[in-house]
Amino acid sequence: MKLLFSTCALVGAQILAFTACAQTQPLDKTMTRAERKAEGVEAARTFMPGEGDPIPEPKARASKADRAAARQARRPEGVQAARTFMPGEGDPIPTPTAKLSRAERSAGRKASRSEVAKANRAGQLPSYSDNYGGK
Image (cartoon, rainbow, N blue to C red; front, side, top):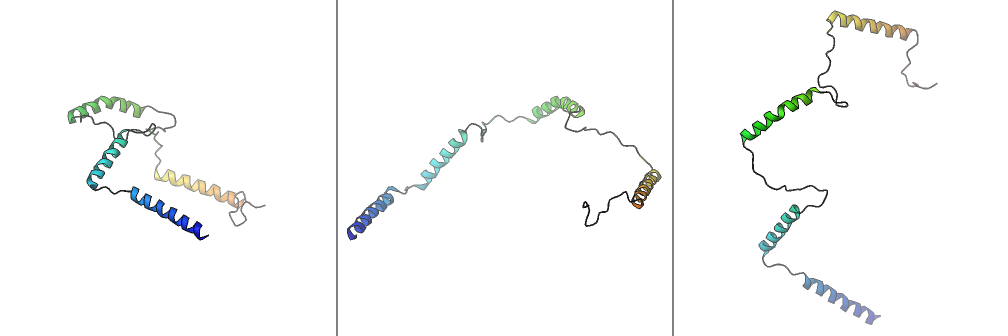
């Protein structure tokens, strides 16, 4: 038993010593940082399929005059697209509602409330108490 324990201890000590010696610390950390930064930039440039390009290639900046000319060229198409109705988008220009006077709105409310009151007195409206929906 002692022989087995001592053998395992010697083997374990050798493994620990080997792994500790194998991990050497760099003397110049700035060089290591520069290498890692360069690797990171290269990894960002070589993107995987489906990721998209995280850092697009640089291109020349457009002048203000060029941007204004491009806006003017796109404007008629945008105006026309805003005016045409696309199913599922909703109508960008809703139909106007009929304008009613204050007296007409008040008369409509009174008529609606009187109909509800008559239906309630006749028992046609459900009771919203605790047993609503029960039989």
